[in-house]
Image 1 (tube, protein in one colour):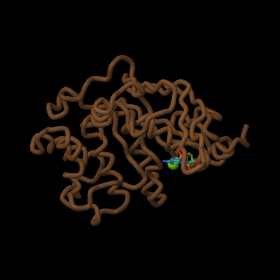
Image 2 (cartoon, protein in one colour):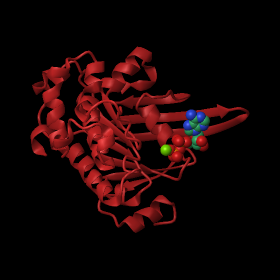
Image 3 (cartoon, rainbow, N blue to C red):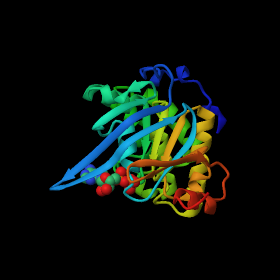
Length: 267
Ligand SMILES: Nc1ncnc2c1ncn2[C@@H]1O[C@H](COP(=O)(O)OP(=O)(O)O)[C@@H](O)[C@H]1O
Ligand SMILES: [Mg+2]
């Protein structure tokens, strides 16, 4: 694990176009609201959220279905815009970026991993990994060694020439993580990343995300509904009805106790 995960960014010329994170990293948001209107129905998905996450570590966001977890992640990742509030992510004021700035922010400052692995079915694993760099105007051949090294580190180096449909769910998610890490983001967002995996693959992935955060010194923020997942994380933040209901250290907690606390019925 250690080799590439601890290698300094400047040793990869392919990613030198990435802007350094300006000022302090991490996440700081204040008074964030977001509502959706469908027909005559208006849903207040986030109703005034203040949050802070440090620049490094593995942290969880939990909460019942519909509590606003994905909405929050989308706003932090610049995939959607808040109605109000300030959003600072990896040194960027995401709420002030124009569309071009948001595109560069998404490409260079963050990585995103979703429940659906979102790999392009016609591309091999390695070409899926290299895609963000190619879209960023970098040369495939220059990116390739880094992409291969990431696949090796994540335990799927021997699957690099396979298309996604020849890979297991766990392997596909590792490829998606390699893709998220290619351009050396400061922060990786993961929305229910193990939702489509069996228990054994899910456990391996939580361990992997934890070591990825630690070895690379980045922030991994994971939305999850699985209490066991949150026990791998330093802290767990609980959303309920679009508000922050709780936030507590969660590493090594008993999953049953964590589930009770996340449900608002624990101590
Ligand atoms: N694009 C959208 N259009 C309309 N309603 C949405 C949209 N995205 C989310 N919502 C609504 O906002 C609320 C929060 O959704 P979401 O953030 O996806 O919750 P979670 O991820 O915690 O399950 C829900 O009521 C959901 O139906
Ligand atoms: Mg969701």
